Length: 229
Image (tube, rainbow, N blue to C red; front, side):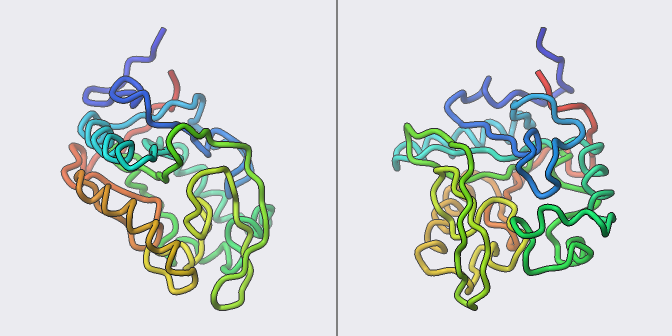
C-alpha cells in the first residue's frame, strides 16, 4: 500500500518516471557515513509544483542527450536534526577525507553548507546532477584530484557528468563559479543552472547541485513525514 502523502506532495515517479532517483541519505555513502534518519525508500518526494517543473527540465535535458539524477529532494525534519547532531559531534570525522577535507566540521554551519532549518523540508528543493541519456548511476569509485590551488580532494565517480567535484563535497570548489576547478566544469554547472533557472528554480551559490522552486507552495512550512513508499 502506497503511503498517503500530505496534500500537494507527490512521488516524482508519478509525474515523470524517467528522472533517476539515487537518494544518498538512504545509503551509507554520504558525509555522515550512515543511513540518515527518516529515509526508508529510494523515492523522490516533492511538492506537485516542484515535481511538474522538474519534469519540464527533464524534457529539455532529454532533448540535449541527458537525464536528471536526484540525490536528495524532500528531507524530513528528523533527518535535518540527525545531521545537525552529527555536525556537533567533534569526534566523528570518519568521512572528512571524502567530503570536507579542507574545512573543519565545526565550520559547516557558518560556511553555509548546512542549515539547522533546511529548505529541503519544505518539499520544493532538490539536489541534482545530470547523466548521459541511457546510462545508469553506478557504484561510486573514488580517486584523487588536484584543484587549481594545488589542494587535493577525492572525486566521487558514479558515472554522472563530471562537475569537477562530487555531490556534497563541502568545499569552495563546489561553488557554482569556483575558481578552483577548470572552465569545462564551470560550463557544465552553468548548463544545469540554465536548464533549472528556465524552469522555475533558483540556484544556491555555494553548491552547484542545489536548486529551489521560486514559487514554492510552502515557503514557511517544514514537514517531518518519512521518505517511504
